[in-house]
Structure formats: C-alpha cells, structure tokens
Image (tube, rainbow, N blue to C red; front, side, top):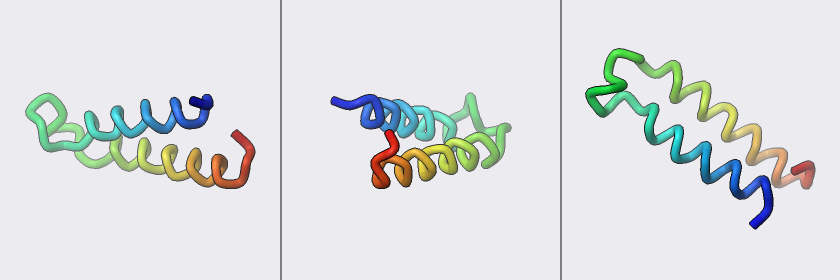
Length: 52
C-alpha cells in the first residue's frame, strides 16, 4: 500500500470518530468533521493527480 492510501484510511477513521453522533463528540458540532472532510477531499484530489 502506498503512503497516500494509508493516509486516506487514517483520515476516514478519524472523520468517523469526529462525527457528532457519539456522546464524547456531541458538543463539538460539525467543525472537526468538516475540517477533516476537507483534508480528505484535498488528499483524494492530490492522489488522483498523482502528486502523492
């Protein structure tokens, strides 16, 4: 597996943990998941362009 694939898997797991559905993250709002989602989209675009 390449570094980009590993980064995307880790970011998806972190994104799932930041969704405000569980009691530990209910007070956070959508900020953390929105930021992590943006980072995930940027990494996917870079991967598709062949930069990572």
